[in-house]
Length: 243
Image 1: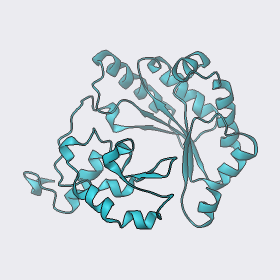
Image 2: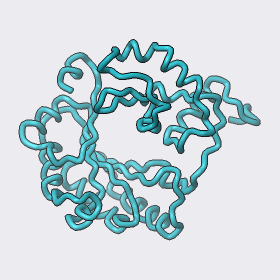
Image 3: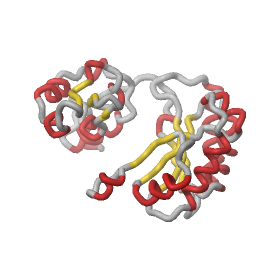
């Protein structure tokens, strides 16, 4: 990351936070554009239930240390709301703000119907957390928390956003996007055998993009971005003149 940042490439890190301490934390704060801890609990017991690791207290200490360190990186946490931690949403947001972080992000299941009772609890909890927002702390709520459905009407002709969400796995495999990062049909090359530029401009990647069947794509968190991009380039929808 330091080498990439030195060459003007913006770098972000999403981590469980357990190893971000000491000199690593100081270097990360100076280097990264943002660092987001996955911290979806407000108590040690719930964290242990969700992650099977008894490192909650260490992660909170690391979050505080990183937030207090000198550097330009934005520090925050991601809280995935489910039936086991919905009762700790507000307490979790207070914990993150108290640690000195810049924001907390709330999200939940994509493309899976949520029990109406649980969905109501989610909405009530995140609504209460909005009171914590001020000039030093932001509460971000993913749109899909408000949209409790498992389908998408895709009024666009192709996937445009895949060009902004390329994934490189630990084994060097390059996938078209995050939604297809475990699907062989979405694999377009490997950076251990070809340069990223070669992969990006290859016939293989071009064929994968052109062969995408949007009706068979999984539920996509970038559906809205695709609609916006295509709308700007003649989005095909009834009554377009009223948009």
